[in-house]
Structure formats: structure tokens, C-alpha cells
Length: 226
Image 1: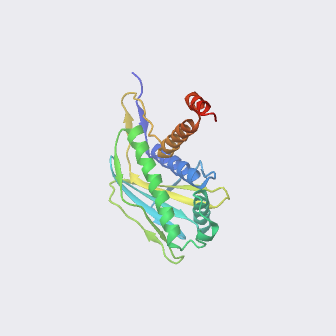
Image 2: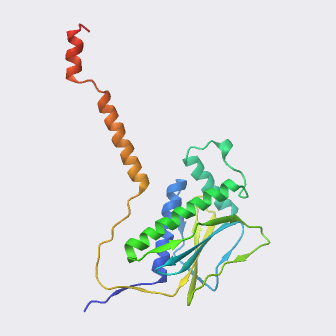
Image 3: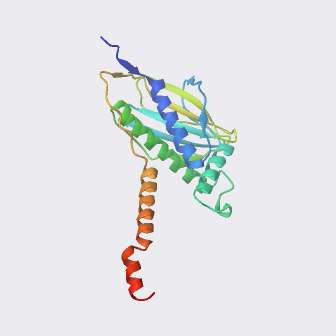
């Protein structure tokens, strides 16, 4: 009898960390990495300078918090805006700007969306989440976020940007294990950006072919003496 594979909190956390690095690296155009060492913590908190929390429910219950220093947030935000072709004059200069909060909240939304897709394909279960709430936090304020969990486990992971700025991800979720009863194929979700790029390339190829003169066109022009 083969031993069934067990997927624990740490494996789910690793999946979440991969979503963070993939989305932010793609968005900023710079490598985002995370520590191989994870901290066990007693509770999750939002800390200065800018933070975000997302609650999810369904196959399992949990809470994800990201805590950015102002330097890390501005680096990721600025690189993302430049990647989008935004001129320097229109890029915010302070992490207190609403534009920074909106952009970082949207990136967090993409991260959680990628994570829920991975959970669906890898664990064969479904989770839903609320809209991420990203906000700048005064240095004198610390907010604890609680959620109803029977046996909560909390973890913190340190991330590093391309310029060596630091931010943190905290995960709290019910103590749970997924036990793999039999093998199954994991269907990877298609990347929308890849689909859009492929479609654009296909359209450009068709346009180029349509613009090329055909032999029939050459014969017609020759008959006209041109």
C-alpha cells in the first residue's frame, strides 16, 4: 500500500509565497524573493508603513496580511507604473498617496486571485476572498485583525525586492491537512497576459500578410502598364 501524500499549512504557505513572487516580479519587472525560513507567530497584525489584509473562506478559512515598508511599496509601485508606460511626472512620490494604495491593492488582488487558482487546481478545493483592503498606517498605530478559526496557525515570511527593501507576508489559517488519496493531473490556469500577447501577435501576422502584394495584384498592375 502506497503512503498518501499530506499537504500541510507550510505547503499551502509555499503556494501563496510563489503567487506573491510571480505576480510582483512580473508586475515590477524585477526579481522578488522570499526567505526559506518561516516564522511561527502567535497572531497576525497590520504594521507601518502600508498594509493590506484579505479574508478567505471555503475549503479552508484564513487571513492573509502584507506589511510593506514605505521603501518597498514605493519601489514596487514605481516599477509597476514604469512598466505600464507611465511618465515619471505622473508617478506618486509618497506612500501616503491614494494612487499607491490603489495600485498595491490591485496587485494584492492579483496575488490572491493567482493563489485561489492554484488552490483550485492543486488541492481540488475552492476558496473565496473579500476585496483586499490596502491602507497607509501611521507609525503610532498597530491594528490586529481577527477572524473566526477553530485552531489557528500563524506564519510570517520575509520578502526582499530587487533593491533589497523588505516586506512581510503573514498567514493565519485553520490547522488542516489535505491528504491525497490518488494521483490526478494538475491543470494549470492559462495566463491572461500570455493569451492577449499571442492574440495580438496573431493579428499582427494577419495584417502583415494582408498588406503583402499577391501575384494577382502584380499581373493586374502589369496589364495597366504600371
